Image 1: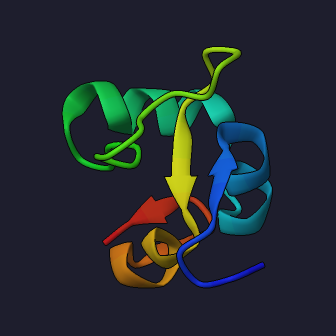
Image 2: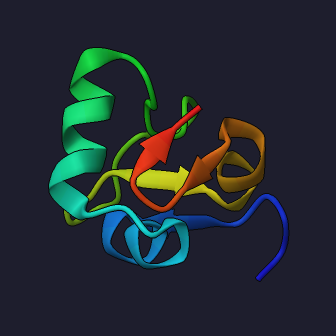
Length: 64
């Protein structure tokens, strides 16, 4: 997957080690928002960039 590829919340959750509900909480709190240019898929899923995993410091059950 390219560095700037977009992925739905479930895939991002698996790769980051966070749960989807934790990601929704962080997004609603403004701590870890989905992709700015296209925040939702056609099906309504939140979209996250591959780059966000490395840049945000997401590891397991914490957000740095």
